[in-house]
Image (tube, rainbow, N blue to C red; front, side, top):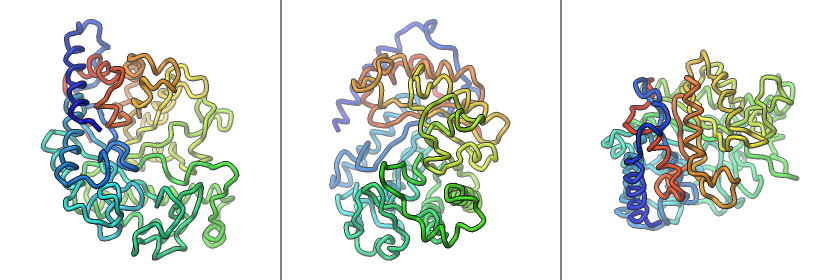
Amino acid sequence: MGQVTRRAFGVAALAALSTASSASAAPRRREQAGEMRGMWLATVAGRDWPSQAGLTAARQRAELIAHLDTAVRRRLNTVIFQVRPTADALWPSPYEPWSAVLTGTQGRDPGWDPLGTAVEEAHARGLELHAWFNPYRIANHSDPAGLVAGHPARQHPDWVVRYGGKLYYNPGLPEVRSFVQDAILDAVHQYPVDAVHFDDYFYPYPVAGQTFDDTAAYDLYGGGHPNRAAWRRANVDLLVAGVAARIRQARPGTRFGISPFGVWRNADTDPRGSATRALQSYDDLHADTRKWVRESWIDYICPQLYWHIGNPAADYAALLPWWAEVARGTATQLYAGEALYRAGDPAQAAAWQDPAELSRHLTLAGRHPEVRGHVYFAARETADDRIGAMARVVADHYQQPAAPPAR
């Protein structure tokens, strides 16, 4: 991954930008009240960390700490660390096996505790550590025999649904929801994490020509719901509400946040929806994200607003105020998920070739007091910063450190 080279580049870029006149920077944001400045640190398939499976414990630890140091250097205050990428664990869990991303072999003890280390080292640097869990994805392949012997999915094959070349736990089974909560709450009991975090994966994204086969569960548990889609949304609601309640009971200071797909529903489907033409989390993922905010079930929501200003199907400048309106008057804080990974990618639209695109997002957000900060996907790009988009954000908006939003 070239951590040393990446770090040197980031320092040089930040130093160069720090000489710019403060008069050219965007207006100061709400630093007095706190401001989320986060980055996701993804481990599924080794996306951001570790650089490869099977490194020594010392090398893995050094790479992890380098990411935390990058967050500090970019004047961020929160790292969202993926600790349960595929029904496995980056801590010694009594419920699930060690993740294969560490050693290359699922279930093999890596000889150290990544989550425990991340919490300790993040807090030592003044960073919050949010533990990120994927609730239902079991594997990015479709063969249960490829899971370690003793894996819960092999012990309970009736919990498993094959779909889109992957394996998932069935959200419609009460025993699955209970197990998922137990696996997550184990980490909350063991470590003083600042938050539990979910991303956008609930029911899986639609795959053309395939059906998520939960008919048996629907026949057993779907009574009282008008249709299967409503039942599926109720299942996800039960998970979200259950996790929230158990976190409050286990560790009252720990928050619960979710980073869903950025479109709840399109306005041509529902007049309460956004002026967009995109996949809808409510209909396609069975995640009623608006409800969770309006009912104040969760402590924060961080919709993935991964589009540029002016995008014809999903305009950042339309979605941000829509979410601000949803969050207004609730106890749920709103942060914007930012697509740093798109900046400078030649496959992306012209707007993403401009280093100032993300900075403009923050300037726009400054006009909406409900927006309490931003989270960047992801750690690798936060360090690499291929066209200087992150350095531009720091120079324009993060001239001084800021605490996370008050709870």
